[in-house]
Length: 198
Length: 206
Image (cartoon, each protein chain N blue to C red):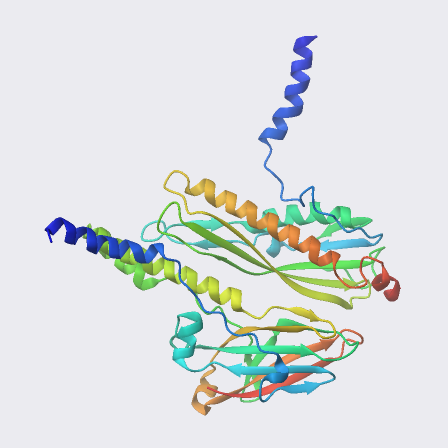
């Protein structure tokens, strides 16, 4: 019986410890809620947004794949905000289905500074442009958020880990700011915008 | 002063430079209505100021844009309407030259220092630590300049009543415009209520 209990406890704890932290909205943050049905348009291009640079010989070779994490994080964190949230690769036709609003993110730019010393803080910045459409395709809101994160440059052994951490931090910041920004769109949370479109 | 002290003095002065982060000055945010040449339509006031002086560009960006074939333009928008809302997309700001739109944006700097890479290669071959440090500093500087350009750029925005927005757009200089010495900048705003676009045009001297 004791062995069985240990197995259950391990089964509960281990996956949680091993799983990669998902960039969802933190527990302390109040998530706005609305009864609207939303479509989140995550295009192929958006989910593969990255910053690649360096040749690994005369300059440091780096790659920041923020798109994949953003796609995962945005879908997960925006889901509780709406009555239903479906993910699509393309913008749906006006008036299609039960959709009330359409959310379209676009990566405006990605920038990362570099440092010479391992303990110097470098910064990663992601510019995310949002467009919110109603069911008829009319633009309800356009906005831009700037997500940023700072981490040590790292030495030969810790550089990879620091790169992963800074990428996770910037995605978490982008997701948090996106939820906040969408929650503050005038007329969206009380459904006025969607009602107007119907 | 002994030879060892001189070495540490020189080494210290080289390493202190990269340790210090680059300091970029903030461009003073100015409401569109207080800029001369501002255009007002349907309650939206728009102003555009071309930053052509190399000294001024160096002051705020630490880069000379003309060498890259660009020039920065400061854009300021002010919604003075009581109820109307507008949205402005970054890609709806473009340059006209000779009657047709040439391009609307540009990747001004890549954040890559080619000179730095060449110095790094030469220093690595010559096993020169000092040279490598200088090369690394040049590469770091290039990334910081690019970051500053990204942060100061104008962003797509929705302007509610009494709201302001401002930022820079980095415009490539079309060949025809470079010969003529001027170009036309078009900023398109869209009314939220009915989706009607309003175009603001500015003739800028370059």
